[in-house]
Amino acid sequence: MELIDIIRAMLSPTEFKAWLQEYKKRRTVDMRIRKKLFPGTATNWPDVRVSLAMLKGSIKNAPVVRRGTKSYALSFEEADTMYIEPQGINLSQFIKASDLNNMRKVGEVAIKQLLDFYQLQLSTTTDSTLEALSCQALTGKINYPMMTEGGALVPYVVDYGATQTYTPAKKIDAADATIVDVFNTLQAMDKGLKKKGFGSKRETLAGTKVFMQILKLAQDTRTNIFKVEVKEGMINVGGYKVELENGEYHIGDDAAGDAIMNPNVEEDAMVMFDPSSNKLFYTALDDLDANLQALPIFMKPVKEEDPNGIKLLSSSKPLPAVNVDSICWARDLFTAAK
Image (cartoon, rainbow, N blue to C red; front, side):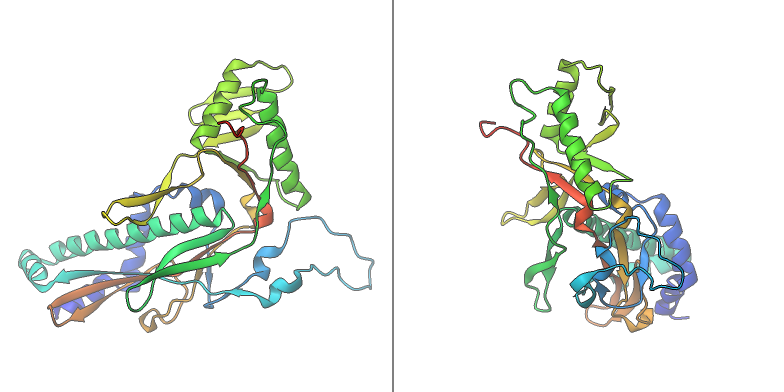
């Protein structure tokens, strides 16, 4: 059997599925935002486009309908004619024929270990990219670098619309601010979600500066109105669990080659969201070897002649889709002097 056939066998659907299950156990990318924003099972979507109508519905009760009359129609307005066409995360890793030859002398186990190493690199990079896209989706707009056929980078933009926003009358760093003012802000954000039919499930993330100010107020003020509990990375303010979010994602490199990092949540901002209506789609891949199916990730080896070796290709086409009505940002929390 030729070496390329051996590697293809190692990447057969059965073998690759087993490898993916094992990979999930040793995944190194935290994917904190992706998990919080899309806690349910991802959807393998058999189309290259996703209708915006699938994201626009709110979770509200409906009137009952008298027997024998027309059903109550859920309205999505103009969204049923709008579509999003996700772009792919297509990666490659070249494996030199000389490296494969050295491994072949040791045996197929060594080849499998080498293949596993490169599969791990491709999967980790794909996960990191999905996490970055999820962080941007939380703002209501994805604006991520996309490489064109010629190698130039252009913006890949998916605009879901404006999220809800809230600006408190009293800033959390005002001279007379107390933990009660933080509670009032959280309650107002929650009320905004509920007006749109959301809020039964709640996640609240605070940037570093906001979290430290809430922590200071929690320590400086005492109240019998509601319970305040401080734990590592979390403050419970009257039932609202505010978590510290100080993660960052890579958005590119500067002229010197240093990484440009964006915060998952800006240090002076806080976001509350209900993840129940968000959906993570994996759309159909533009790959005949994948049978044009929708898969979380697909890998295949391609024989290269000059230089001689094998190029390991991976492809994934995720769409982290959010309902902007289920997200509320508070960014104007500090006084201008601060």
